[in-house]
Image (cartoon, rainbow, N blue to C red; front, side, top):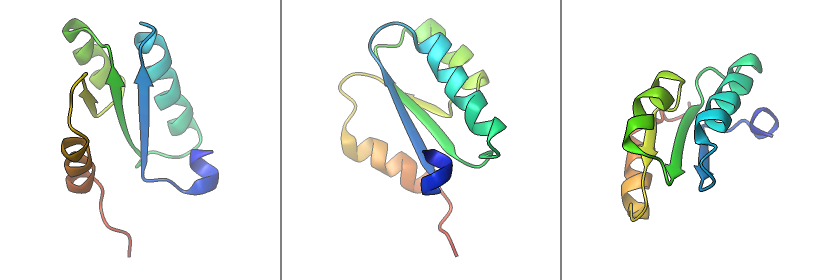
Length: 84
């Protein structure tokens, strides 16, 4: 879907505890599809000790419970290059 819609950002959310499996798998599939410039962000119930692993796996930023939507939007706006 990300390839078909030519997205700039993919946001993932996980509350089940499977983030260490699911997030890297999505990043890998995006890269395999040639979407190397797509910003991947995540949120949900993610223990602090998992953040480094997820970032090393290609998730650029993680937002925990209570993060304001405007803060997420500001991060995206600062991180995505405008299209020409």
